[in-house]
Length: 440
Ligand code: GDP
Image 1 (cartoon, rainbow, N blue to C red):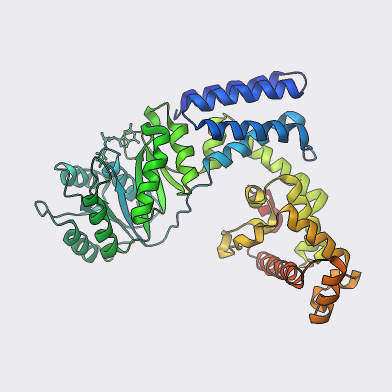
Image 2: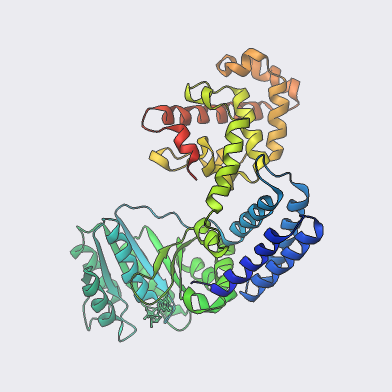
């Protein structure tokens, strides 16, 4: 298993939690100490670990478990959420025609990952081709060619031609009809001027949709410097972390990359083309914690939400008043950071069926919530049910009454409208909202 040692230690910590009679401060402290040790051994940055420990302790003692969740499950859920924070959400990979440029230092696993990535898209039904533009490392051309032949992936290369830019240009023409074009570029031992220049030139010619940086997990926390350096020179849209199967420092690499804000896109977990996974933080962490049923735990939280706080009936009939919205926001806030739980909520199914909801919708922090409450308290019952009634003069009145600015009032109304529109889309018959609510 990938990162077996970390997984074992984390699971050991949680077992203690599950086995303990009562969940009190002492138990939580003990469990947090074990988690700390596990993460530090996996090379996760001390500061990150300390911050996380503190938050787990505080949340475990202060936050009330959501309805239907016992205190043990509640603490496990907090650990899970905090690990998610450390590791980041992961890059969004779209299954559509695109050009991808691979960058990274020599030996990072770039060529291997190029073939693995082509294979990944091919399995999803997209035709993939690769371009061998690593003219620096002598074996790269043949290595990639052989891999592609094995995988039945189209290959373009010009053996003996040292001009990587020309090869890229020609390759893109030849592979024009392919959905996915992946350019394997040269690495060096370090990020030197020559390498940067070549990357920039290939970048200009290929105009890739993605620039994936390949990183060896074995470098642990140093991943952060490398990711920063590459990001500064060409702009990284995703990171592929390789060799997670063979290092104890995986936690360091994953968390360090996440901190740079370059999202993790894929992970390499072995030498064969199959040992490659799209990085999905929730699944990764569930596996690490050995909790196959973590999903159901999340679902449980979501169910308690839907029954108590969300008027599903009304939503399904398209009645989504400001009152409903307030209830929903309040419920979401109770559950923790919005971003983390948006996928559990009916209005949070971002990305499904093209109904992507904008980021700003999820930025309703508790501060905003307070404002929203004041604003809504200054509205009449009728206005809450039918916000269309609220025009310019009413906005002024509500603003004065609530002590919030007219912009705040407008923002609230806009927020409501966007959500209403989104919900209408879901009602369109194509989706079953209740079924979707069950979906994590
Ligand atoms: P490049 O110089 O960056 O193109 O590196 P290569 O693709 O040639 O990879 C260097 C070595 O790492 C090769 O022996 C690969 O088989 C190995 N490698 C790449 N990815 C992984 C991985 O995820 N796990 C393991 N165990 N080995 C890997």
